[in-house]
Image 1 (cartoon, rainbow, N blue to C red):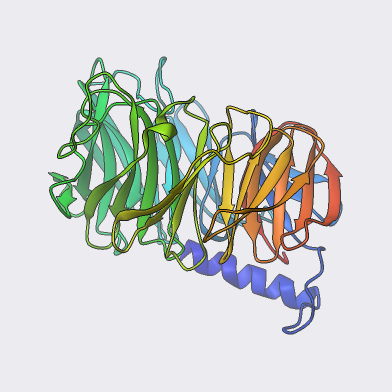
Image 2: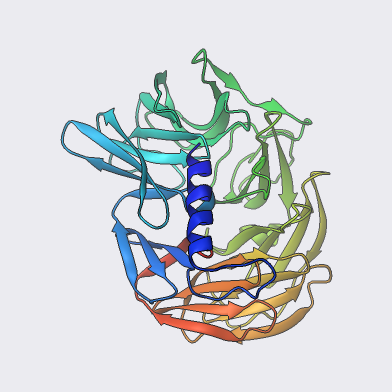
Length: 399
């Protein structure tokens, strides 16, 4: 498996670095996978240097990087460890780019045309999807319609997809599943009547459950019905979290208060705590925070009017067992995860572009640096001058 190879490599490197259980983990060896306008950059916390730049790639479990390079006829697909070590290399016919990567599977699609955005696909009547197994097997699917891969089913038997409709002039979308053995395209299952049908909107951000068995997608600025089974005033924006169960293959929508649909698409952020018992949605500008119980698929708590700081149309969120970290402008607000009471505010000196919580460390990217902070106290453990980061795609410890 791709993931097994990465874990084995990291274990060897950890032993070589002298990492021992029970000893306080040093900063040396941590690698950050930064998103930039030019692609993915791997930043060594030890040296403060960018070790490699990948112009086109996606990040999967345990820092696995899948890069693609088109030579005019075919695409070379490399699966790499965060150290840059190539774990596998495959040639795929045509110009394809990576969309989804798991421990065993990679989904690629033909390069999108003009007009493609994060929320609506470019017009296309047919879609080619290539699925790679960890043993090098390739499966190609040519589908009638406009599709984008969303996630693989846990057992690897299906690929969940977003279908954009109408195909040549898309203005809405729905979830479909591709059976990888037969190539059949099927509707998604429904947990209850309040399940997603055709959806419209411009806000869409995602987070995977800690066990990689559910995908939570935040939809905001939904106009029209939003999802079947829900009643909303026509022409009034609303928001919800779309729960996609990757084990049993069903979907469900949990409606959110209207405050989460009042800002830009980037105004709200979604996070999940380490044991998967809570999914949080936060909006920096409106001072609104919501908690959802994904097991019971319902909203359990909402607080509005929090004074998080100076208004910002971009929010970043991460959660621990007992804390919720919300970032906006040049600061991080630390909230009690049960009461949503603001415990602390930490300044990072420049506009935040991403945050990632890993064990006891909070990694914060800004417009001109990366700050490594103690997640309990906010103490800056290391500040690395690096420009151009627009997000943190992954953090790998003790490489």
